[in-house]
Amino acid sequence: LWSVHLNDQNGLKFDEDKPFGSNNLRGAFNQVRALWRNQYGKNGEYVAFDVHPFRSTKVEHWAAHLANSRQTFLRLLDKVKTLNEAAAQKRIVNRDYQALDQMVIEHLLGK
Figure 1 (cartoon, rainbow, N blue to C red):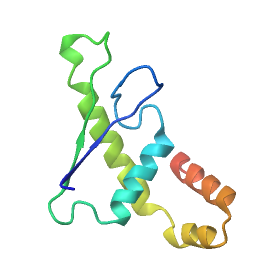
Figure 2 (cartoon, helix red, strand yellow):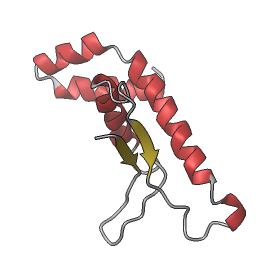
Figure 3 (cartoon, rainbow, N blue to C red):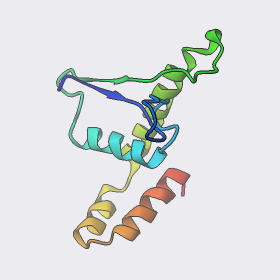
Figure 4 (tube, rainbow, N blue to C red):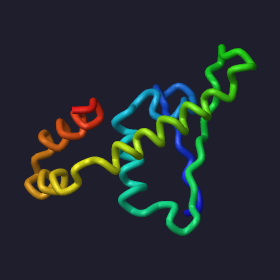
């Protein structure tokens, strides 16, 4: 798999291709974490964004959705890199998923 195309969705009616992380920040964090933990990009693979500007966006603002997706991805990558992975793995081994969930939420909130 030489590229991954990321976006976000909200609903089942149509394919929205919203900016990455704009609807489900925790899901976006999990995606970035999976890519990082599996060393995606090490062999030249890349991440792209399969997003569209919101329907009512003015033409002069159309490219902002790409910049926003990239910024969100990079900020989440920073969060992934600073997550206490040993503590996360301990919670996984103990099947303490409530504590893992809270740990990630607090990490995303800056605690």
